[in-house]
Image 1: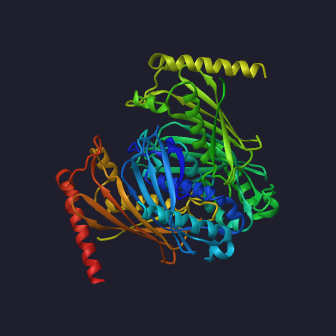
Image 2: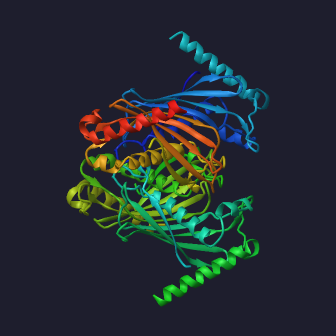
Length: 147
Length: 147
Length: 147
Length: 147
């Protein structure tokens, strides 16, 4: 597995007076995609927080190619673009029903202790996640290479 | 003091494709009004949470008379409509720049322990708040009576 | 059919620092439930707007019995509680995975012309909707009566 | 003038269960900063839309250095980082009360016709804006140069 898929229907509240989905909404859809990616690896973000860790965002880049409108369904595709034991970089593509890429972006996260907000090494505190992330990255890099 | 005032400018993200402020936004504006009311009494909601209490909402009623649009400034007026030591009921009126009442509503809250979510008596855990709330309610009831 | 069902997974962005879903979020979930109700009747809210009409909210009541948390899935049940040709009142119950009622409420809507925001009679401008709404109301009233 | 300032108080609804402002919120604050920048130049974004134009976002980059918490006030500083007659790139820095840079980022916009979503040249359709943007960019470049 190197890419997760999940679908969202545009909510009316997500539109703005331009008649399209407000651009901040897609960061929330990225988050939905990220949760699905983690679920597909066999883990749960909610459980990770209960276990005492958080994965705050340090950087986001996002490009808006085509807007979504109310009534449409979006497919969020999420993969692991980079992972070095400290930082995870997720990649995202959001596609419309014609399979056109509408939104693309990345988000970078560090794993921190819930109480102190100090960075921790995933390998040390969540070794099973670490292994799964290395595999996910490997299969992504391989897919990129093979085109 | 029986009524607090605070102003918000409509944010673009708060509009929807109807071209007006999305109706869920006003609950957030009520929250802004409530924080101002508490500040005007000399307290801080943020501090109250740090002290170990939360004031979750149990009920809301809201009537939409006139919509707000992007570019407009709204005045949120907040008062204490009822308080019995356990439940606080805040009243809200949101006015446009012509001083027309656009949105009105109420929210009911209970004070609970942050860890257990169990209700607590304000008089016991926050006696200064209790006194201020009784005074605020008294001055509101008096104002209502005198019309 | 007198009740529609649809499910939403709690989004991280929907939580607040109380650790539960922020209370304004449920108005957006009501909206999701309402769209499903209309879809189940064989119509589309998006299409209705394209046809030149809007259905703004005039009143909402909402009661919060149990909070939702991140990681949970909610089932939104929606029905037509009242309809008189001008005003539609939808009823909502939001249930957790243990089938406990967590959130209940109603929303009242009028049908208006998109350009003028003036109320219009559904029977006149959307006769098929009118018939379906009368049937939906009838089956709801009947279900209530029969308990 | 090469930088605009405006302040926002953190709203409770803007926090998430991490206990800090949710990362998507800052895109809305950027939007608030952008509106202030335009206002400081003597124009109005709302008026621009009424005149038949929109300025959708094509790209955003954002870095999260320090989180904001409920109870805090943020200062949003906004400037014009680039402008070529077609694309405008705004720069943002969001500072806490200790004057520490917490959030930084950029947003890129194109001016489009409201009906067709086709790009238009600002110089042609909004010549006064064009002049003001060229001046704002000049004073920003000059300030950068002079350190």
